[in-house]
Length: 180
Image (cartoon, rainbow, N blue to C red):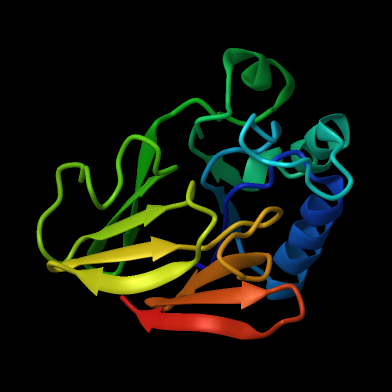
């Protein structure tokens, strides 16, 4: 199954639109959102075209195709307006023989690992910094941020297909790629 993975939309209707265009273009069967969907948070500047109500409508149109976890900016009120679950702290995904622990990253991260063993994959957002590297036997993946990237990175999302995690920008360039 082809998955499109994204994090940190932060209420940007502009970048949510670009994400949904990429989702359709990529032909993915499901979209995995790693949190911070609607609110920009007190530490971030407003993203381009900050319009959480528009983002709600845009994403609810794909509610049957979205798996999501709670970011540090999600609250119970977000669940009241979104038609897909957003309050789980993590989810487990499986790709071939790999276990993927998907979470936002503010609770579970490489400095505070969830129950994992060598060969497992930690997939998270939160830092707004794209990543695809092995550390102490664990593969650490981060698709970067859709709307508020940091450390000079472009706005990005990722695709997971056939055991390959590919981070892409919205101009269709592969920014980083790694085999699970």
